[in-house]
Length: 507
Image 1 (cartoon, helix red, strand yellow):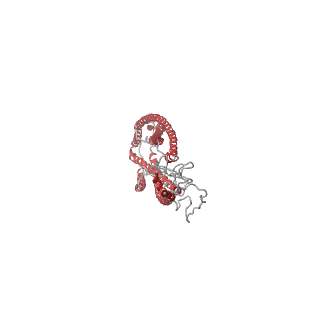
Image 2 (spheres, one colour):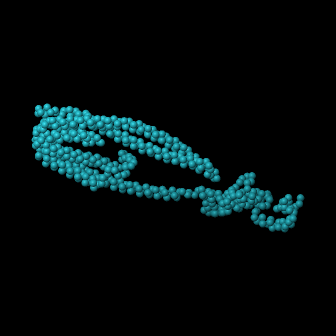
Image 3 (cartoon, helix red, strand yellow):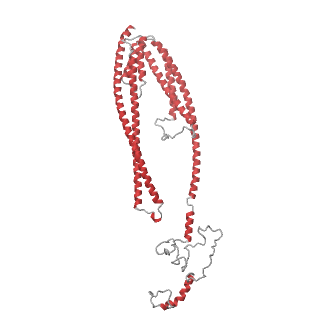
């Protein structure tokens, strides 16, 4: 075997020409390689040195974090028969793994990153990137909450002061209305006694007058919208007027008494309504003053943070309170003046009274017939409305069940997307067709949910309208039945005692 063969050339490939050039540079190449790689020489027994402990400078970080002695371009390792690298020296860069610089696999392992890169990755993982933001958010949130509760306490205190002042104002005006109500009540009672003395001279005429007025009083008990001035009402008023005509001499005086009595009752009714409203408002505001955030009676009432449609200004309220008391006092003074003008009168003929009574009875009969027909139509409409409400409620239940099913599908697609977004790693987390399909499914589910919610709102609105219409129908039916009870039963029984012309003639 030839001993002068060049160890760096292949005899089967390299040409023999130029071999003397290789022999001429052999010593120079060997010297350079000895400086570059100390492991280039063949293995010699006894050359392995004992392990040398690594010395870290004082105050160095833990071993798993970057060290001052780490190389920025990777570990410089040489190639040898027992070295760790089959491919020799490799400089590691951020492009590690790119074709051309990827490490070679031997039969033991494959390495991709250097020790320095491993330590830098450990430092990156251990660095808390959101902790400072969380601390700042926590501090600012606590400060904002503290300021918010301070302002809430100030607003609550201011509201309590204003409510307390309001209750004092209401209590003052309530006393004024109570005094005026007592005065007008006493005046009504006194005027009624004087009127009874005047009517004592015509006992027979007391009966038709009492019947006519009682019918009018009964009809004032009708509910809206039946509280109308219909033909029966007109005839009853004419009947009262004819009774006054029969009395001849004291007609004007008695008419004034009756008008004054109506005014007194109207003033009393007005002052009673005002007193009742003030009692309710005072009760409400006293209850509100007693309430606090710790009370057991507080609840959520959505939609109340607004001005009511019938809300008035404070100036108008003060003017109204004073005006009601003043009007009541003026009516009371007029009644006092009228009570000194009462005088007796004589009787008028019974024929006019009988004719007017017949006309009144005919008008009442026509009113009763029309009211009965209207009541029947209202009851039919109520039945149809109740049926339609039941259908709409079934539709709402079906929409709720559909929303529940859509929600289950929404949870399914969200679970799939969450798993694919956060459990797939590295390059596997790609925008494949399945991802596009899941996103499209989620979008369609959202649109479907919004559409179903819109239909739910429409159904709820329609049901609300039907419920309002049902309430209106029931209220109107009750109103019509009340009117029938007054006109058909009570007024008829009262008018059955109307005196005949013979009774008038007989005195």
